[in-house]
Image (cartoon, rainbow, N blue to C red; front, top):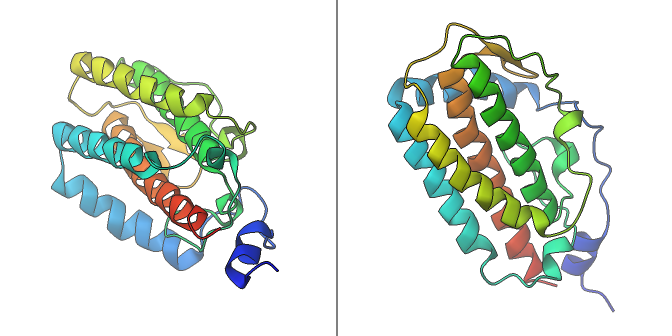
Amino acid sequence: MLGAKRVRLLMSDNLQATGVGLPKYEYLFIKYIFIPTVKKCTNFNILMNLFLSETKKLKRAIDSVSSDDLSKRVVIKKLIGLEDNSRDFSINMVFEHIFIVGSMIKEGLVFLNNNQNFDVEVSIKGVKPINNNNDFVGDFFKFVDGYKAFYEQMPKVASKTTKAHPWFGELNSYEWHMFLFIHTFVHRRQVEAIAKSLKII
């Protein structure tokens, strides 16, 4: 017989639709307290180091996860900053998502750093994972290496031009660079929660 914990892992909750967003209190805390605090207490280099620290934690989180387990979808408890619709991802799906978002941020920064408009549509639905294979684990860490090289050449000054985030409004180049860290931080915690849950099965 399946234990209660295992049933919890294999069943699907009644998750909200994609793009519904965060609970209002959580959204307000992130937008008006957390993001301004991070912005005030950091600079370009600090944010880069924080991002790289998160990527190292991601590597550690999946070190003991088998290739087969990377594709197992797990319903985890609500995490701050994580949309309800995203609580049933596999580790592979999380890596696909952070690869998509990271790549889009990098592409957008090329335009913003030149104070040019980035006309690509940015939507929550558009960055959701659609595959469930471990190719994106490797792709994400290749992206990290590419972003490190890109960062070395990137102007360390906030652009005058902005690009709107679907939830948090207009962001300049510094704020998008900051969002790369914040976004990775949120999903690193998700990967750790999934990996922890997989050990219960």
